[in-house]
Image 1 (tube, rainbow, N blue to C red):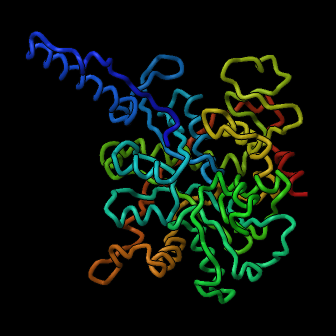
Image 2 (image 1 turned 90 degrees about the vertical axis):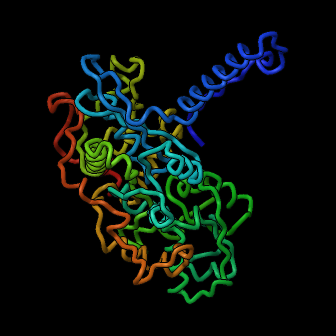
Length: 421
């Protein structure tokens, strides 16, 4: 589902009046229908806005704009951060973080030609390419950031205890499902000894609470949500059972690569720089963020850091993502995800590695992800078919941070240090 939409109603008289001059009225009717079709294409389908030319922040130049699809999950955190950074700098293209609430809505827009860049599940990207949707993975979105959750008062202590139970997964073409299959192998489960249920990630905490299933696996913050609300606990973090776990990747369409490779390169640079800032940055404030007691706290459009919240890059990223136009979530929930523990999710080491995808593809083939077009010697399929790492070799962004003299910059973040203690 798109974050915004517009609809247009035609007056009833347009269809029900009796014309006295048929040809003239038919001409007006066709003109009206054509106008409405164009408006629908522009506002609802966004067919004419990729990439756009928009005014720079100071109005001196025009720059390109590209929408980047994402879900409100911390696996996609670099998307709103990159969007925020691009909006506060006139030196580069603007990347507009475009929120969806489901994978099908996002993939339908890609298939229809309405979206040229998005964060999606890694196996799903591979399946789309194999099915004929011309997309390429150009960068990772994160590492780790997924957990298996059970009820706080349940007796389950290991995966073995879930034998005969129901477990919700976010999508049949997800690495979360692949991880469960790996655990089934390790604990010698047959397919009939655990029931997997496709379930929308935002609804998983409520589903667990109401007894729809005994456990779920999902990307944050929907694992932490059950913890914060007091009825759930983490059985496993993916970082502990599949280190450097990959859930989501950044994909772009091949038509965008052909039409504007420079904006693809710029997007990858921005995602990379945002991830490194989140993981490794100091306490300088990002442009557009102000502390609560600052004289700029009332500035329209500013993101205000509440007193005591912390100003590390992770805390700043949480506040940016929590904004209504991005995730529209409680910043305290995102703070919990990004600090409890600090390595619950990471945004470094995001370059594409063939060995990572070889393991994913091995399981994907075994699970029948490509059953519609099996991989054979005569019809091969591999890393180069769905990945293009060439855009990762082109430098990075300089982020719009306050000057060293304006803050306690240079040392490690106090928020990170406290979280590690």
